[in-house]
Length: 285
Ligand SMILES: Cc1cc2nc3c(=O)[nH]c(=O)nc-3n(C[C@H](O)[C@H](O)[C@H](O)COP(=O)(O)OP(=O)(O)OC[C@H]3O[C@@H](n4cnc5c(N)ncnc54)[C@H](O)[C@@H]3O)c2cc1C
Image (cartoon, rainbow, N blue to C red):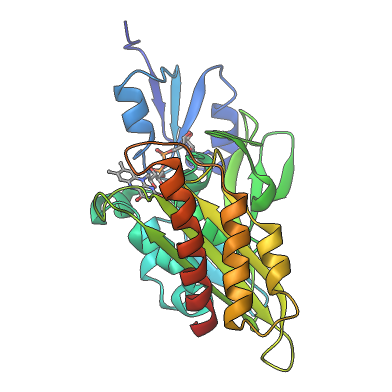
């Protein structure tokens, strides 16, 4: 039988939240869009729920000349609607704008979108493509982890049970272009069959690529970074043959499973198509 005595706490400071999570079987709650389903289907039965909604320290977007900092409790809708994010990080803006539907985007938070670790989620590949780092705090430590190193397996991350995501930091690189593109066959409000986040950083000549990232979601247990796709792009001018060969390498990197969004073979084929299209977009961004 489901426990009826779950405590619901609303801390008003990060320190209070960190203390509150120390009780065994406690969980943090952001917008609740994933947690509510897990709770309703009894996949989780926490003894305490710590809602982060009153922590103003975790809210909002700050942009300086060197970095963009987004608080963990910033809603996906706020990210999607921010014009500076659209200008500086078009990939993240696009990923935030396609999640679920307007109601989900209004409630879902950046922290939840990262911590939930469903490999089909749109935001992680868009953020990994631009070298995002995640700030984590517990009562005993504060650390920063590259989002590229954050995911360990299906619904599994490096987050300790008492760790809180406080913010995500993305370096501002003026010579970098980024994009996110996904294919969602069932409805626009659903998880994608495959999603691709990419970035290309151009050398001083404005033509030669000196850094690249291609990251796929929905086609493995975690977001997949194709380092060979990146290698195929560096040193080129993002010409047609470089984009085609990077897309082929992206295809080689995936490890999808059959499900209602497509067979493994179909997802593999679509990974190549969408990696190519995403890189094309990136060149144009
Ligand atoms: C109808 C529907 C459609 C959806 N479609 C999409 C889609 O198309 N693409 C997509 O990517 N996603 C989709 N989602 C999933 C949605 O993006 C996630 O549910 C959402 O991003 C999670 O954010 P949240 O704030 O609601 O997380 P919550 O449900 O509050 O939390 C999720 C997990 O993160 C943990 N957590 C939350 N905040 C923190 C923090 N600051 N520090 C540490 N841990 C934290 C919680 O403890 C929990 O384990 C959909 C969801 C629904 C319900």
